[in-house]
Length: 119
Image (cartoon, rainbow, N blue to C red; front, side):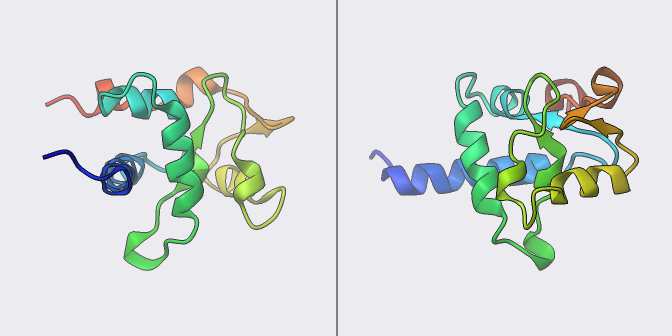
């Protein structure tokens, strides 16, 4: 029996949230790395939709969306935060240097779930 599309997305979003909650403070990951880890190599855009939807979650359901950026280290999701600078401020509060909407030491800060979450 095939799942309804909404249920399929809801389950994928849940999986995305579980991975994003594992990104340590001061580290960042990418939409594509998360999608690839979850077996959806072409699903970076869907991870972005999940991040956009996660802004409504709080308390124990909170998802640190500010730690997910694009593959070049750019803060592409900043328009979905409470203010134009909120994403940058959240990352800087964790010690991540940002200049012109880009993580400055991206290679050192990058958290790849495919390597970090190996069994």
